[in-house]
Amino acid sequence: YSYLTIIQRCWTHLIREVDAFKSIAHGNDLSADIHAMFKELKESLKSENMDERKSMKIAFEKRMGELVERYDP
Image (cartoon, rainbow, N blue to C red; front, side, top):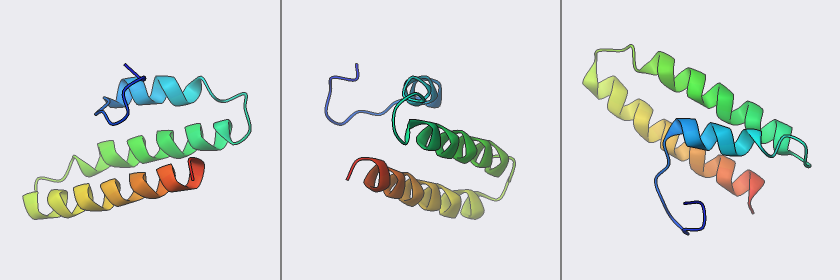
């Protein structure tokens, strides 16, 4: 389904896709950034404070947007 312009992907598919690009320029960096973000996201879900989780969600969405801009200008 990667032929669609804007879609929502699960983390498993996203990680699999970025790992496929490890051999091209900046592909390894992108993979490392996505893996690190996923690890942080999993940690953040341990919080039971919903206000904290909502603010973390906003922060992660912003960071994901920044990654897109960095690797796909």
